Amino acid sequence: MEDRYYITTPIYYPNGEPHLGHVYTTLCADVLARYHRWCGRRTWFLTGTDEHGIKMVKTASEKGIEPKQLADQNVAVFESLWRELKVTHDDFIRTSSDRHKAGVTRIVHQMLDRGDIYRGSYEGWYDEGQEEFVTESNAKEADYKSVVSGRPLVRYKEPTYFFRLTRYVPQVIQAIESDQIKVRPESRKNEVLSKLKQGVEDLSISRATLKWGVPLPNDPDHVLYVWIDALSNYITALDYPDGDKYKTFWPVDNHLIGKEILWFHAVYWPAMLMSLGQPLPRMVFAHGWWTAEGKKMSKSIGNFIDVQKLRAVVGTYSLDALRYYLLRAAPFGSDLDWKDAELTNAYSELGNVVGNLLNRTLNMLSKYREGRIPAPGQATSEADQSLRRQIDTLAGELACAYEGVELQKCALLPVELARSANAYIDATRPFSLAKNPSEAEALNTVLNLCAQACKRILSALLPVLPEKAESGLRQLGVVVQGQTLQSLLSEDLPSGHLVSRAEVLFPRIEVK
Ligand code: ME8
Picture 1 (cartoon, rainbow, N blue to C red):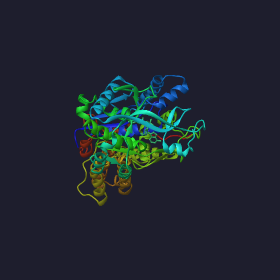
Picture 2: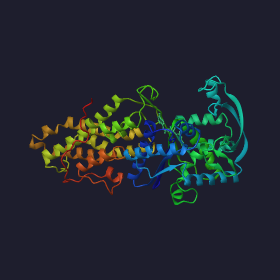
Picture 3: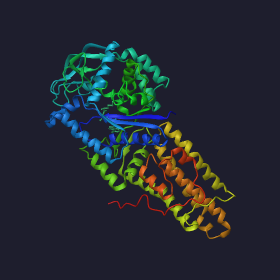
Picture 4: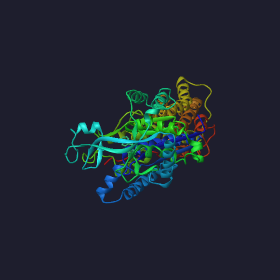
């Protein structure tokens, strides 16, 4: 792997406040960014907001304000939430910013020069009351009537510019099939390929009826509509095409997104990049969709996981516990369901497994060896060897899990090692060994191995539980600053190393 890493989230619509879905993608990207930084790679982590388009215009007009004002209000909420959640993004791009608009204008110019944009007309079902086109499938579902007013939809035709998507389809299929662009999970790659093979039309990219957007440089009566504007953020934020950031960080290592926008990222975006003659994304990873307590999140049902609820979770359980719960909830890529009971269980698991192991280890070291890690004994039992093997294989397994973006596994692997180490303590009974001076060597082995296990487990958890893991490592007498994950995961604590007193990492919570 190279010594640099670029990861993005979707740019979110600021037509409302952020919610669980936005927080999930952003925190998952944060885990990946932290991991790659810990590996010593120069890392760039981008997020932002997608501020143009009909959604924004409509919500703003309902509120009696301008779209820009609506965007400013909600962007402030997104930005302050990311600060509260200690997200380590390096940049936040707004599509209403001058740097983005200048970048997109340049991109459209290049596509025009390539002959990839042409004028035509767009025909579809139109809701006159709502002043918007309705897709064929939505129109059919609503019996060709407005879902708002119930009035019949009308056929409407308006001039629009098209992007020659069809020109690039064979190359896009090739890039996905060959894994030049890794579309993940694999099952979704197959979905995209089969849809592509059914045939695709050129893409309508402008609207003459909309004012809130980036004007087309060749025809300022039109503004860019949705995808060219939004997808370009991934490179305009790097100062495409001449900026140092672009030269350093493009192509992106992972566009992390929700599954509902995979088609645009796996098909439109690579085709746009081909038109620009630029390298393609290395991976597009589409994660699953959250429901809450078994149902689609909805304000009226009362199961909507909004900013207030997330703040309360952080206040009760800690930010790291929220991160762990989100990662643990399902294999990465699958759909997920928020359950308050599982959040409590995930927190207890951290306390009973990881916290408990650290506590037992530090207490035993303090009680039996004055807080110093003893050299292991000469003879080793089957149990010692088995734990030692597990300690030594963690680094490799973790690297594989991160490489494959198996985030649930990234969170669980260290916890599983902690579970094994606790079972090892139960089986080797150090409290009995301590009573018998002839077992001093055996006790040394147990204490040493437990300390090594704690160091590996907490180090492996640094990207997932940044605060708790660092605090645990501090108790073990390990200073993480200036170290890489590789050194933390491969080097044993030396004999004679002094640890601190145990402090509780995951205090018990009285659930009201
Ligand atoms: O689609 N479960 O913005 P958006 C999981 N602006 N993830 C969810 C989710 C849920 N229930 N709800 C939202 C847009 N997300 C466009 C993107 S990118 C060039 C333009 C997350 O505000 C998930 O990452 O609707 C999803 O892709 C994104 O929020 C959609 O955010």
